[in-house]
Image (cartoon, rainbow, N blue to C red):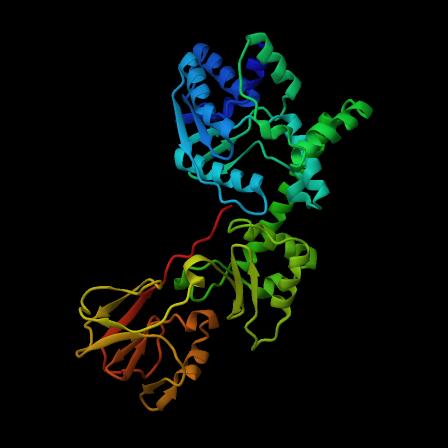
Length: 438
């Protein structure tokens, strides 16, 4: 068996019980070698079902011929191919936009207990480390690319991270493989290309082991990040307890346990937590956390991040995103109280018990509302909500039940003395929070 085949088979041992292996196949050198290696292994070893996925970005004319080339390679190897066309949202970074479109497509393909294999290698790892170092990344960023991570319902695996580009080129020449060359790879305006063609050769000329050393450093940093993640889990365990208003369905943390930590541990714990919801703030943007944490008890500070917002309320911090950040309003008639009522952009409400008679409608706070409470007369709704402790961000979305012009009750909140003779409760199922990409 070829040495590279043997090395790859050993790397793949923990994943051989997967239902399927999908290869991200661009048609370039790296992915062509990976696909050929896997096809060779499949001829001699029982492996999961193997297929290839080609993502067509449509960003350059030359790429229009690549799906046909990829199909010819896959036909020769006996590997099924799926071609996915994506629309790249052009923004500040075309590379990043293309990557996001590509991985979004991969998520559509991969199912539970399936693996997507990509062909990044040791040289890519070193370039990533240097690229992120120049951007001022922390330990998480400098740990570069992990060998495996979750992707959609399955797993992303990079089995060639220990293999050099030179080894892949040697294998391709020995096997007489053909591949496509992306013209954009020679454009030195792209930062990675500049590093690859201008910077890396100079480093290797002076330090021949530079790539191996940098890859090893990335592994050390990944280990350090693992320890920081373990510390974060310990710190978050205390902050995750005692959640009131859990029916809001929003991620939240108790502020007190976080405030007791050192600033460095606060940021570490929050970075670990926020990483599950979207993009992390850069160094300068962390001032928003200080403002949120140190605001007065009566304040309602907001820390706005790329994919959502952090709010304070009830001694906790709350993550809001997606639907929760969209405005709502208006009045909704409830024609059939025996059935749930959908609230545009705000979940739904349903009665538990026998609904009250008469025309019913749902409204939201406008200010000045009053609620009749037995033994206490008409109470200002603002004061009633203050007594419940409901976080401020949820008060404007709380469904209010009206019978004609009379406020009968509040969803989900028990107010002693409100409608004492009633045999019903109004139950609100809030919208699901879109938590972004991890």
